[in-house]
Length: 136
Image 1 (cartoon, rainbow, N blue to C red):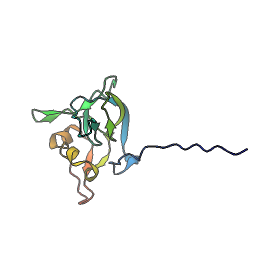
Image 2 (image 1 turned 120 degrees about the vertical axis):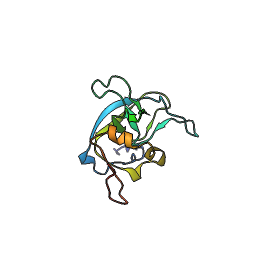
Image 3 (image 1 turned 30 degrees about the vertical axis):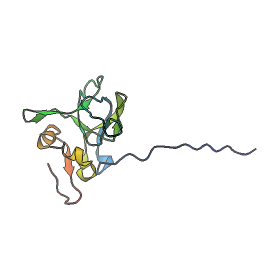
Image 4 (image 1 turned 180 degrees about the vertical axis):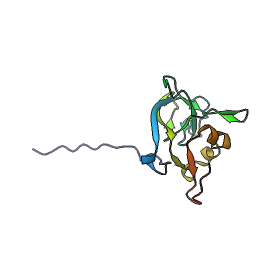
């Protein structure tokens, strides 16, 4: 009797934004599409590295894209991988400690990593591999 071979198609490897996975702490959360604009294909994608806001204590409400007002950001972490939130809330991982390679972020996300966000994310260190200099 011949063995039956089953082929499973897995999605492409997710974008890697961390410099060292072993040196990070991430938590599972839900994220929403609040404040996310649809792209040209009609998809609402939260890009890897986007600063997020929500409660790290209860985590029973979905996290949203962080905002900055009055010179301060409400960011508590960043999203680890791209997540499609077109249909609504989805599961995701939020990084609360680690070293992020800014050069691996989309340019639209790089512009979100402001001084206010870095201050709010005290404990995160963002690097650029091109220069090797810490940005915070």
